[in-house]
Length: 200
Image 1: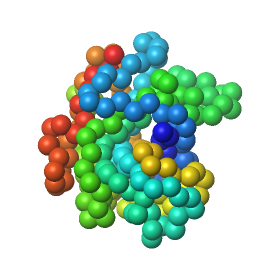
Image 2: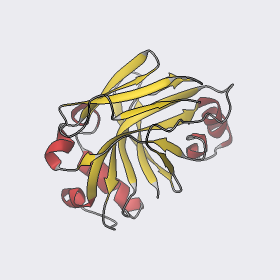
Image 3: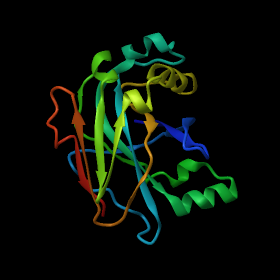
């Protein structure tokens, strides 16, 4: 399966806008609380959370008003950035995806069935160590239909793909950091069992 993510851009005034689409074409999704391993312990890392959407059906160049037909379930996922490797990619002009995770590993939490209503009120708190942030569709991806439509213009959606419509700001992580997330106002999901794993 593949994972597609949109990296948010932050300007000098602190405003955020939609950035580039990252494609992890052979992603390894970690579920069930499996640990996330850091490839180089001495490097600096941040973990960027996002709502995750698991797809159903196959389609490409999907009109934004129809993208919900390709969404099967919702979850919480996070993308690991190796900041030292990212600096090297920027210097050498290499693809930024080289700095994403180790073997494209993506931690993913439990899922809930997709509905447009659940999507638009989806919100969660994400904690890494002693730092936390809140992510919500209303704040980070109110234009989620357009974001998914933009992804589908470049890549074919296939059943089981993981879409991350808006990566939140990164929280620093290191070996032995505990990571968790819990939802607000989302039915059928145990509040403290959405996402829970350790960095190794």
